[in-house]
Structures are given as structure tokens and as C-alpha cells.
Length: 355
Image 1 (cartoon, helix red, strand yellow):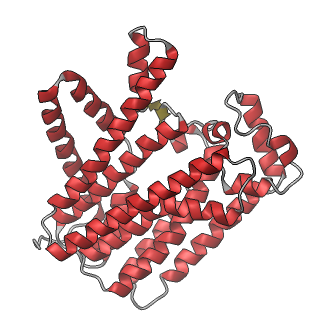
Image 2: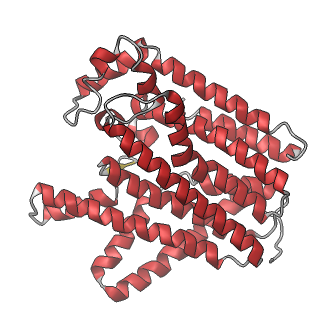
Image 3: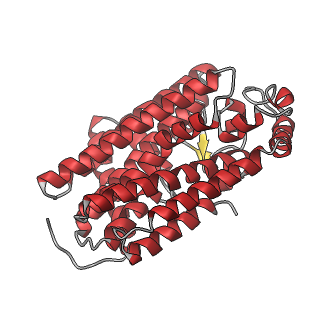
């Protein structure tokens, strides 16, 4: 393993950006040799990642640096790999949700739908072209994640453990995504426990559990530390996703990067919906969510019903409970004071988004 001078979180994040920039530059150079259309797809994929918060690399680096890691090159590559995984999953998620914008801008599917429409292609066919481009772009980002991880100069045993962590993250997220899709077609709202299980698989594993454990493995931490960080990541990841669900209905597009209509229009099964389904308000609410023709007035009424039913308050209480569980995992000898303090700040950031 290469040894380099210690770095701080800001420097580490800058290195991640450098790795990502080089990855896209090389990919675009390869694509250009195959044709301008392929180059355009890579440019759209790169543009779709601009302005991202880089949550996963930051989580990984937080664990790595506070556990004494010094291999800056490897840390940046593994952090960038998790960012590419995130890119792949959100590009595919937008396809599944039939969303054509993210962070207020056209996503990959939106760009290609627009190009087709501008060329005079019929609306349905233009939509199909956009979604097809999104699938292809997401595939490229996913393979890129494994490519970056495989290029990190680390011991063979460490590389194998990191590859297992990344593979487990993809496997869990795909399983969670499938459950999410299936639940959206189910006529009844599932129990809250089932929703939380889905959200853990779909988001918590790849966003928190896996990056934390990867950072610990890369730093040479003990198995106790790796296990503890996984448990912490599970609970803060669930809290993070419940906040995301709240923002998906009550937030603004500038905060979430997605339309505030998307979850309601799709009929997405969240803890909000699951709780409200047990209340009298469900008789009216069930006729609003999942309506592809949902209007702004309908969405406003759905929000009112989610508040009056107590669903929003219950979701907020769940966020507090899982955040408290996450903090409790940090109260063990295996976690250093510096790491405990850093991850306590992660809890605060995760639950206070949108405030």
C-alpha cells in the first residue's frame, strides 16, 4: 500500500473530484473514437453529476481519515467509485420513476427526450428514446464504479474485501429497488416495517453502510470497527431515507433535486403512506396518490391529508428514533473519539436536511 502525507477531508474531496474528472475525460476520449453520438451520451452523463453533494465519498473519507488512513490515492479512487455507483443508481431510478429532471435540470433521459422532440420525433417515441439513453448511461456509470475500484493500488486481500462491499451494495440496492417497484403496484399499503426494510436495502446500504465499511477496511481497521460502522450506517441510512421521503412530498425541487409531484404521482409507498393508510383520511388520500394526472391542487390536498392524519409527525418521530440508534452505536470502545465526533456531525447533517 502506498503511504502519503495525511490529508484533511477537504483535500480528500478535491482528490475525488480529480479522479472523477480524469475518469470522464478518458471515457469521452474513448467514446469519441466510436462516434459523436456516443461522446454526447458521456457528456450528458458527466453533466448530470455536476453539483452533486458527493455524500458517499465524504462518508468514506470521514471513516478513513479518522481511522488513521494515509493512502490518499486509493482513498480518492474508492470514494470516486462509490460516487459513480450513486450516479448509476439515480440515473436508473429516474428511468424507473419516469422522471426527466433532477436538481431542476434535465437528466440524461430528459436531454435525450428533448433532442428527439426537437428533431420532430413523436412524443411517445421521444420519451422512449430518453428512457433508453438513461438505461445505457446508468450501465456505463455502474461498470465505471467497478473499474475505478479495481484500479486502486491496494493489497490483493483489501481489494477483494472492497469489491465484496461494493458488490453487496449493488446487490442490496437492486433488491430494494425491485421491492419499491412492486409495492407501488400493490393495492394496499404495506406495513411500515416492510417499507423501512426496503429503504434500508435500496439506499442505506450503498449510501452509508458500504462507504463507511470500505473506508474502515482501507484504513486497516479491526473487524469490530467495520461491523460497528455497518450498524451505525444502517440506522443513519434509514433515518436519511425517511427524511428523503418527507422532502419528496413536503420539500422543494431546489432542495431535493426532484419534482415534489413525483412520489405522489407515482404512488410511492413510503412510511407516510403506510401510516396514513390506517387512518380515516385514507378514503380520500388513496384516490389522489398514484394518479398520473395529479394536479398541483391535488398534490396540495394530499399533503394536507398526510399532515392531518399524523403521518408527517410519525415519520419525523421515526427519523429521531433511528438517529438516536445510530448515535448509540458510536458509544463503544472500538470507535475513536475523533471518529465518534465526526460521525455525530453526519447524523446532524442527515436529519436536518431541508430545514
